[in-house]
Amino acid sequence: MKVVLRRVTKTPLDFEVKSNEITFKGYLEYHEGKLILLKAKLSGFVEKPCDICAEEFKMPVDEEIKFLISDGIYEDNNSIELDVVESFSGEVEIEELLDSEVELIKSDYHSCESCKNSDES
Image (cartoon, rainbow, N blue to C red; front, side, top):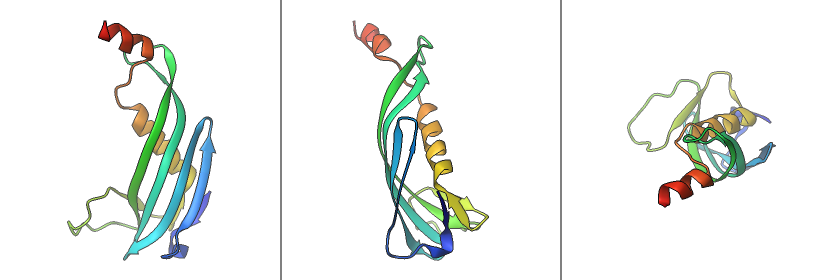
């Protein structure tokens, strides 16, 4: 789903995209200047190798996502506490944001239930 940033207004623009067993659902809304607020929920399951035994497992995901998208280069004025993603084409591809968020989650340290249970005993 491609969204033209200059068409995003104060009225929230809802979106929902799915990939495999994960859903990215939320809205885009004009924030200020060249900034668009993205607020969404990422839920479902992601397949990932365990960081201990390397066996693939389905990791549950239930994350609140909130960041800003800049239509062009973002000039930091130190008053914004959220992450800012820059778009140089004037549009944003929601599926790319989903993929990016999933990869960010997968890059953290995670272990399967078997390894978690063996650590506890």
